[in-house]
Image (tube, rainbow, N blue to C red; front, side):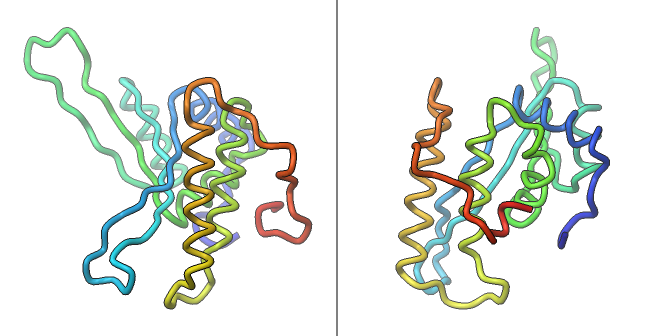
Length: 165
């Protein structure tokens, strides 16, 4: 698998539990003033916790970045630690934990389908592919709404797809 090395299955199962409980995945519609279309899509997976050791472990296993929201001195709340992977790293992470996901399995399915729309070689993106990405972004937003964790019946895994690996 390109990207990060495969992680031990037990570690993937643990990461899936962290992600199911404390994580989120989104497809962002980012501004790019210098780009040909003026914007682009990006996949982002995040786990936010008050336990810094858990998010540090995620970074050690899967790469990515850690951001800390420091609370003011005297605040009753602890600092919030947020681990984030983007684009291909997010794809690699979701592909490895997908077999172990329970509550966010459908979000992972849509996210990996989104990443399939990216060619191996970079270049100008056709309008129909941008439209497909926007449809997938809308579907992921629907799934991320509270209580909406089901895919439509007509969303099978496509044989031969990179997503099935």
